[in-house]
Image 1 (tube, rainbow, N blue to C red):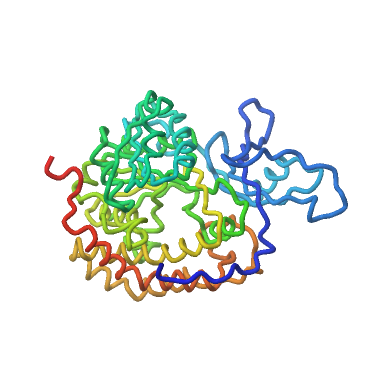
Image 2: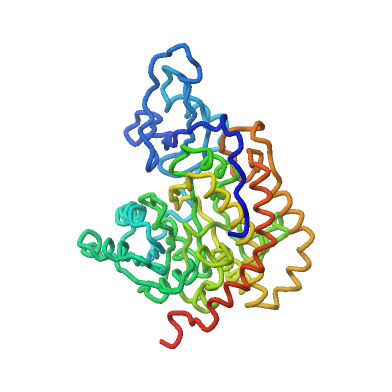
Length: 444
């Protein structure tokens, strides 16, 4: 571990936050309705007041939907005797500009897909994820579980048992450690032309796979689609701090990134890979992904690089001229790590994964160097802004993703910046470790 974990700072103001979904227009016409998010208890009407405000009030993080379509999030406070749906709906009306019309690609059919789930020694979490994937409303898909560098037979026993084997879930071991290597094994095992990837610590919304793959049928030029990632639970200070830093969500507006028409508001494009999405909710057209060599096996969790495998794939495809689409309609609920030590590891990994990704891009495609050098001064300024500490007293709850106005302790900022410096070194070490390893589909 190339860093030390400082003591947990004072997080007394970061009490647990309930996570729920708010539908503004219930199908039966009964008005707003709340339902619990996966992994969270139901949000019932509060009990009569006891006289203690801190006991009577509850904080709530709500995904707001309009006729099923996600339109935003609100963070509200439910007081004793309040109806949660009514209070949250009033807040949503004040804070969210509701869209008009259907989702841009809602009328398009969803192509056949392979869902790849990489895992390592977490059968309990994996079972939860698989159950949600088997409940998808997509008409035609398969699931491949890649067991990465296993040390026990627990994952094999789970996936090959009757509960999942008889429902078409396939098991594929990958001996080379690292998330990128696991994803490359999934590419080799896939039987569909559209490949969706998610993690073993998520619960997928029933419409996730349909929303994630449907854009490929609507736009034949697309090579990658990413989706919305929301917190399944906000019960510990570490989970709340992560979500307050922006979490994994990228907003509620569909956005297309096309190298032929670079976005005017993205001066660092295409090197701001973190804006495009995250590996827990992403899909690719198999042909272009294989053509660029898939994922770089010297990146990703489980390697010395600590991360960056998803970011590498995004930028690599954009650099080849392929458009990428982000859609908030494809939702997974992510179970954030619960402990302070895990959050410290994630902070370091954020920085390391970014610079490891950039290093991998320059090694694999040196022609990108001039473009990167031109953007380097702004990139360094952007990195300083992203990793700047914020006092925990400025705001205590998440909600405004990407605004970076919520608490982020100084120690986590230092870890991110150390990660930025460590990333190239980690990539070199990881590259030496996988030297001579071929992609699983090569030579077939």
